[in-house]
Each structure stands twice: as C-alpha cells, then as structure tokens.
Image (cartoon, rainbow, N blue to C red):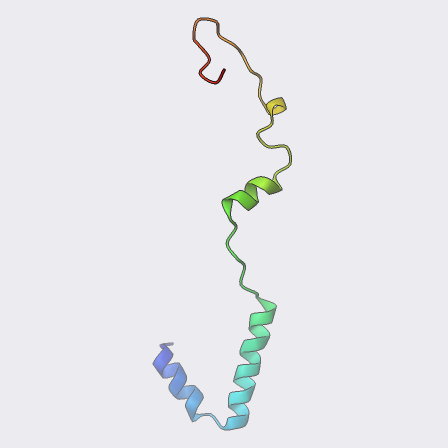
Amino acid sequence: MLPTITMQHFDSLPPMAQEQVIAFIEFLKNRYPAKAPNKFIDVLTAMPNVGQDSDFSRVQDESTQDVFT
C-alpha cells in the first residue's frame, strides 16, 4: 500500500483505533528489532585466533627474497 493511502486510512479511523494501530506498530518494533549492520572489524575480532601464525605454515624459499624481513 502506498504511504499516502495508508495515512488516509489511518486518518479515517476513530481516535481509539488510531491508538491501537500505534500500539501495534510499537509491539512489532519491539518484536522485530532492527539489527545494526555488522562492521567488518567486529566480525574479525569475534573470530577466535584468526590470522595467527599457527594458522599458517611458513615456507622460506631461498631463491626469492622475503619482502617482510
């Protein structure tokens, strides 16, 4: 339903019914709370031990120079 039509329907209701609609909307907002989008850093920090050296086997190839050392 379009918002303007919905508002027209809402405005045509008696005051007691309008209060019930508002209360129902509040009930739905509490039942289905909006979830904040996960931030990438929060996802990474929630993973235990991700990216630690024990997760990888380091192989030193003597023919190429290690750029990190």
